[in-house]
Image 1 (tube, rainbow, N blue to C red):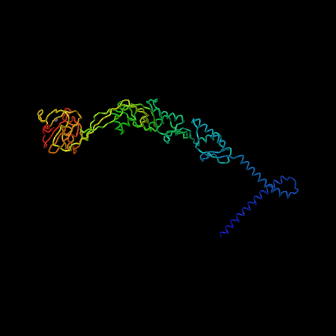
Image 2: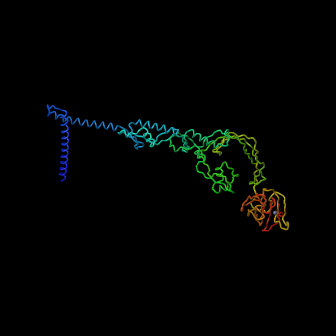
Image 3: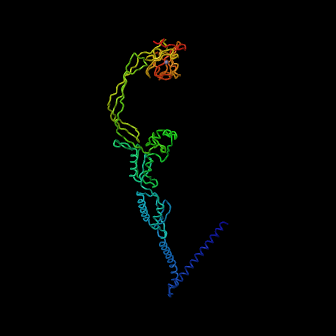
Length: 494
Ligand SMILES: [Zn+2]
C-alpha cells in the first residue's frame, strides 16, 4: 500500500512538472513566433528552418537579458556596504570602513577637547560585509551622532597608589603632585622647614598615568581632606554649659588623647559654649615622614661605686655620696611621622657638665637572729619629746621620739610582725611580737617596710617616721606591752 501511494504521488509530480514544461514551451514558442515573424519581415526564404533556429537562440538571449537587467537593477539600487557594529550591536550601514575611521577620529578629537585630556574608546567597533541601498547608508553627521551615543570611552588621568592600592585619581599628574605637596605642607604647618633634612612619605606612594572612566576622577580639594582625615565621615559635638573635654570624651566613649588628636587646634583648657568640636580621629591615608637634625641638652647618667662596711648588716645599704646627673649635648637625626617621633639616630654626644659618681655602702655584718633577744634598743634616732605616764589628765601609753619625716624606724628587738595597718589615733601602726609575752608598737608611721608574719631581727628597718593618726608633727610613738599591759619603755631600752 505504502509503495503504491508513493508511486501515485511521484506520478502526480511528474505530470505537474511535464505540464509546466509544456506551458513554458508554448509560451516561448508563441513569443518567438511573433518576434521572429517581425524580424523576418517579408522574407519567407528558408522560413521553416530559420524559425526553429531563432526560437532556440531567442530563449538564450532572453535569459541573458533578464539576468543583466536584474543584476544591474540590484547594483544600482543596493551597492556593496558594511554593517557597523559596536560591541556586537548593529548601529547602521556604511559604504566604506574609512568613513567610520574618520568619524571615530572626529569624535576622539571632540572628546579630547572637552576633557582636556587623551581619551581611549573602550567599546569595540567591528564591520560585516553586506549590501545596502543609498537610503540605508548613514550620513556622516548621523554616523558621528550614532557612534557618540554608543561608544564608551576612558580619559587619561593620574592615579595615586599608596602601598599598591589606588586611593584617588586626579585629572593630571601635575594636579596629583600638587595634592601630595599640600598633604606635606598641611602636615608640616608650623614646623621650621629650614631644619628639616628630608621629607618623604611613610608609605610607598606612586603616581601612574592611566585611562579611567571620567566619573572616577576626584576633585582635588575633596580628595585632599579625605587623605588627611582617612574618611569622609563627619561627626561633631557642640559644647554646652558645664562640659569639658573630659566629660565629652566619656560621653562618646573616646579617650582624652583621641579627642585631642581629633582637634589638634583646640586648647582643651579653653573650650567655649557653642564651640563645635570634631569627634573623628584622623587616620591619614598618607603619612608625612621627616628627618630633622636636632641638638638637645640631655641628662648625663652618673656612675655608681659600691663600698663594703662591717658596721652594716648584710641586707643593709646606705648612700655615702649621692650621685648627681651631668649634662650632655646630643646631636641626633630625629624621624617623625605626622609630627610624632618614631626614631632617633644619635650622631654625636658631648658631655658639657660631668656627672658625680654615687658611692653606696653595702653591709657585711651577719644580722642577729630573727627572734627576741630579751633586750630592747631605741627604734629611731631623736630626742624623747614626750614620756610615758600621765599627760594632760590622760595616760600616755608610750614614749614619743621626735625624728625627721621619713627617717628609719627599726625593730626594737627581733620577732614576728603581727600587725601592719591603720589603727585609730596611732595612724599607720606596726606591732611586733618578741616572744616571752612582749609586744612593741610603732605609731604615726609614713611608710611600712614589712608585712604581717615576717620575721625581723633586732635593729632591722621596718618603716619610716611620719605624721599619721592623732599627731601634730612627725614623730614616732613607741610602746612596749607586757602580757597585754602598757609599760614604761624606758625601763627596757638600752
Ligand atoms: Zn605618743
